[in-house]
Amino acid sequence: MFAHIALLGLTILPAPAARTLYRPRVELWTNRGDAAVYTRGERVRVFFKLDRDAFVTIFRVDTDGRVRVLFPREPWEDNFARGGREFEVEGRSYNDAFAIDDYPGVGYLFAVASADAFTYDAIESGDHWDYRVI
Image (spheres, rainbow, N blue to C red):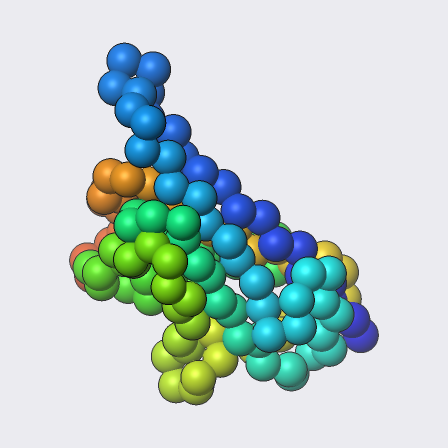
């Protein structure tokens, strides 16, 4: 059972009327690098780096199509990161970001960076992510 993880870094651009030159770029990788292959039960470490200060959200789409937010762990947590530094995404009870718990296939990690703070109201319930909506 093998799961491939594809890494995608995205940059959110402001609406055309509010467009500025501040476009943060985010780099995302795992402890095994690009096109890593993991087996069920293995734990994955996730890292990111920005070229400038920005707000960051990192998602995982597993091979079953489930979407999970890896960073920030909860919608109320601080997701501002300083540019030029490497960060590691921490899991809930381990140093690793997550464990492979899905069927063989290709999973994805997405990093989204923005100069402006994210509004998570539509995808949170109480103080937690609402995975029924996501």
